[in-house]
Length: 161
Image 1 (cartoon, rainbow, N blue to C red):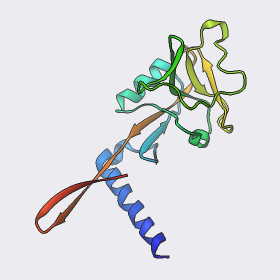
Image 2: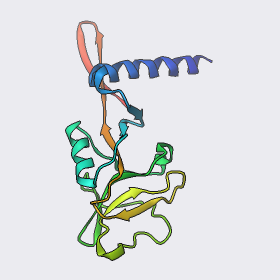
Image 3: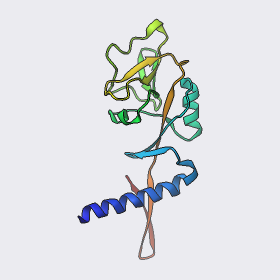
Image 4: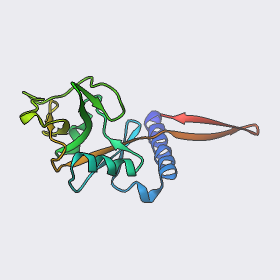
């Protein structure tokens, strides 16, 4: 019982720190999960415009390292694009692992160089699409929290995961 109470207290502290660090007005419609905050758009745009929106908020299109995005409940752009013959994430990393839908990527008409979550209720849901397609998008912003602690007139900072 004490552990659960501690976890709730720690989560509440983390949330207060997050609000303080990011600003209450800026967090509406953003969701915290595993060290990042996420925004799912309510409008559609092509891939470059979607990315520009994220960048304007200090974020970028989401980079996916596991199947957590199944909870986003809509088709949306992610931060994966084709560079030459390789698929790259917006953070510069090479694609690994992948969650392509069956028979994807197919580069239909040799124009599909960006990636969307097509089937949000399936793990293997990625689909390549032309960058001109209008779609919802998911922004991701990595966050870290700094906690100030004082002990005998000394101040130290500790990162909270």
